[in-house]
Each structure stands twice: as structure tokens, then as C-alpha cells.
Length: 358
Image 1 (cartoon, rainbow, N blue to C red):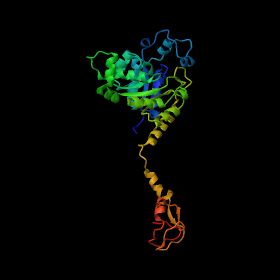
Image 2: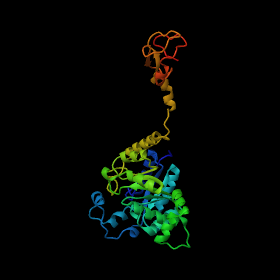
Image 3: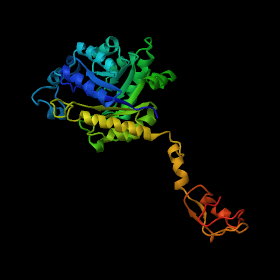
Image 4: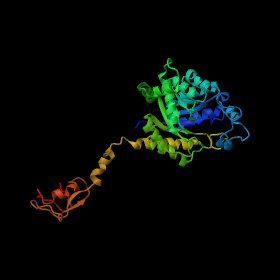
């Protein structure tokens, strides 16, 4: 099994604070994450000024502020992006971000020149943004929360069209489908796109997570498939790894009690460390699927297995019978599976009682 990629999702858990953003990078590095991911957006491009907040956001933020006001406080400046990406390089962890609007996407792809971009679940029906993501030529991670299988397929159609990047063909539903069904489109999706199963609730309830849907998408689309985890604790991410996820994304925070929309459903530093340690153990335990004794087992095999043993003194020329043979450890002699074949055969040497028959 390939190494599971682990993205520590800082998201907006910096609360707009520069020092907290850098502390989150430090936590991700200490925990052993492969990447730390933030969110990039210009609030004016994402939400109307009177949009209501989601129920979970009302519970974890000021109930009197609008969705717009909440997001505005959580923006990261472009200058801070540059500082963070340089700091991540120094700390040898990949910097990732999610763009929620075209202006932010252009910044990530063309100014920061990121090689991998994450498409959030809420944008999976945003055709123009999906197309722009694909045209960057970056590796793409598509989160699929709130989606039907058909909606995932339609998003992949747009991505396939954008990845082919033929400006002579006008974008349309038909051209998207043709790109998706083409050999080139399929190949580019396999090379460039990873899809993540996700339940968009904070925290996601176990009975609504449906990890088997991850396997359904893997079987349906044949693409690299992983899991974006919004559940409480570390159990579900570990289970997803055991089921074959090649990428795990998990929100984390400095402190769950901090004000902000995502802290409550995030892992604290010690939990992030425990999750990554457990995932690394599980990925080692999955193995290659070939059934056979390991090198560690081979040294135990001769002791733990049994052999045919003389239950009494057997003279040379005497026949082996059910009365002069028994089965005991060690396994250095004739296998008990040969018991019936040996009955009636002649002993070629004297065999002392309670010794292995060889």
C-alpha cells in the first residue's frame, strides 16, 4: 500500500490571527502531517451580505453577526499567505489552500504557484469555478460532501474538460460529457484528481458518515479516493485508512474552546498526533494481501506447530499404528497431516518414546 497522505486542515481556525496561523503550522509539523491546509477567499466574492449562517456556525460564533461578517474576520491577507508558504518550506511541510472564488484561485495558482489545490464540497456544483480549477493544470483534490454520485460525476465531467484544456471547444454539457468519456479525459482525471468522501456537518454523526460510500466512488470512478473527516475524535479517520483511503484530511485547532465556526469539531494537538500515529500503524498493518508466513512467524513455526511423535518405543521394522503414534510439539518432524499415510508403514530405525518421527 502507498503511504497515506495526511492533510492537517487548519482552515479558518487561525481566527484571523497571524500568530495562531503560524502556531497551527507548528502543530501540523510536530504531529507528522504531510501538508497543512488553509482557506483562501475574498468574502465579497463568496457570500451576500445578508446570508444566514449554518446551524452549527450559530452555535459556535456570535449569533448576531451575519455569515458575511463572520467570514470577513477569518480572511487571510495575501501577504500572510506568502509568509506562511515560506515558513512551511522551512519546516518541510506542504502548504495547501482551498480557493472559494475565482480571484482567490488565481492568486493560489498563478501568484503562489501551488502544485496542488483543494476544491471544497460547497463548490462541487459551481461549474465555472470547477473549470477554472481544472485549467490551472494543478493536481486537484475534490471533496464531495452533500453530493449525490451523479453530482460527483458531473463535476468530474467539467474537470475532465478543463484538464484537456482545448480552447477551440466551447464549454457545454455535451462537451463536458464527451471529455469525461474520452480516453484523454479519463487518463487526465486519473493523473490529476483525487476525490474525497465527506459528510458536511460539524461534527458529523457516525450514523451519517457512511464510509462505504467512499468504496462506492472508488468502484464507480476508479480515481484515487480518500476521506475528509468532520467527525469527532480520530476513530473514523483510522477506519477509513483501514478501508483503503489514500488521503485523510482532518480539521485541527489549538483549542476546541476557542470562538469560531470549526474549532469544536476539530482535533486538538495531542489528538492530531495520536491520529497520525494510528494511521501510520494501520497502513503498515494493511500489507500486500498475499497470505503467507512472515519472517517473524517462520521462527515460531517449528515450535508452535506439532509433529508425529512416538507414544512408545518403536523398533526398527515395526509398523506405525494409531497405538504407537501421537501428536505433540515441536513441529520439526513429520506433519500430522501425514498421519493417515504413515499408518501401516515400516519404521526404518529405532525410535525412542516421546521423540519426533522423522
